[in-house]
Image (cartoon, rainbow, N blue to C red; front, side):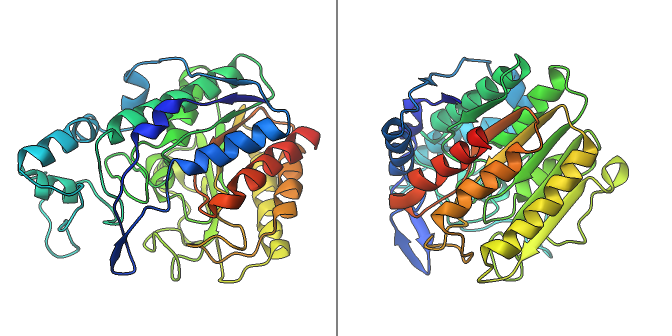
Length: 343
């Protein structure tokens, strides 16, 4: 399986995350990618290449232009205000206090575009996020050119990023950008399956009113798990998208057999949809020892579910999302890829 990766991900190396009432070193860190690359090399997967540059236009096909401009300039504006720490939102529109206009001051502007204050913006964030989008777009092109599968090793992740919101460590929605590029390249239908522990709220928002992209997500119940405010089974799409959004909200302590039942149901729906291409938002934070999740998948389970995905026989792009048990992230990620390749 072809792997696409860029060292530009290292430009995103923030030092600040708000967690449990404290500022801690971020769970989403450059070491995550190092462990995945090391495990790929250990198992002989050496077909790793740099992404092509598709420019900014494919990003605008998914994200609001003013939001993209905010990401490009946030760090510079933050520094210009004289703030010494990394850029963290402290206020944002609430349910009862909202004007749908971004403030001019960066302290207010960051809150306007932010969905969760755990994610800081630091020097190099935009550059890394833009590079990650190119990694996803290169994977999409490989699939369009006839590859059975590809792995876009994106970092930072993307599935929490909506049209005009960032958070959950995500800035640009890599999976959505890839899916849209596939549509623009001629695919009539694309399915996106999110197997990250956390609900792909950003991807859901992007495609919620469309029937040309089927979105399915297996995740921790939003009553118990971040991002909390989307991800219920009753969220099925709207307008033309009614019936094309499927959520599987699973309970704390969910064992693999229960998770796999949901996966099989989701794969059945994908098969019935008969997409021309399949995108997997591959988060491996469903692992039993992940520090910010509560599912109970063991490392061997990742091999099994990779094989289940392969049985659909669809051209499949894996796009890296979460996974924060850093020591095991390489094993679990490559297990999925090998399960798929051998399935």
